[in-house]
Structure formats: C-alpha cells, structure tokens
Amino acid sequence: MTQTQPGGKLTLRNLGGAQALRQFAEQYERDKAWLEANRDHLLKEYEESWVAVRGGEVIAAHRNIDDLVRKLRDEGQEPLNMVIEYVTRRKMTLLL
Image 1 (tube, rainbow, N blue to C red):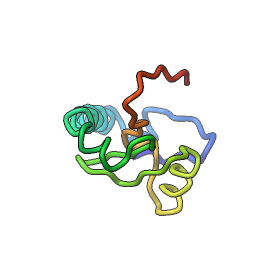
Image 2 (image 1 turned 90 degrees about the vertical axis):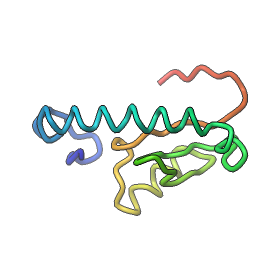
Image 3 (image 1 turned 180 degrees about the vertical axis):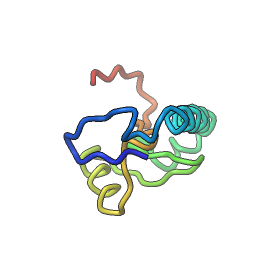
C-alpha cells in the first residue's frame, strides 16, 4: 500500500487516497482482532517473538524486531502494511 522510501513522507496521496486508507484501516483492525483471537496459539509457536500478521495469517516472525523488518523488506513486504506485535505472556508497555 505505501509507496515511500524509508524515511519518506507519508501522505494521503501516496497511501492511495481515502478509499485505500479506509480499506487499510479495516484490514488492520481485522488482523489485530485475529491476532488477539489467536493469541494462545501464537504464544505456543512464537512466544517472546515479534510477529507480522496480514490477511489473518503470520507473514513472518523473529525474536528481534530489526531482523523481522529486514526479513520482510528483503522479501518485498512493507512492514507498515501489517500488524506487528510482540507475543509474550508478560504484561508490557511499549513506548514507541
């Protein structure tokens, strides 16, 4: 969906317009809900790892977020176009 280079400016135009942004937001919410609904399964397979989810499936996972992002980009995937979350049993607050 996004067409910017790393460090590039995100605008409504390069996001594909309002309709594309709305579709992206809806897909993001579905993927976030899928992640929450499947958390127990994800904990068994990916505990203490970062997972990238799109379309109701795990696209990639890695214990290190930098390595996950690098892997996604090497495969031609844009990390901004998916839900990426750390899977853990511990209560955490992430400051981004």
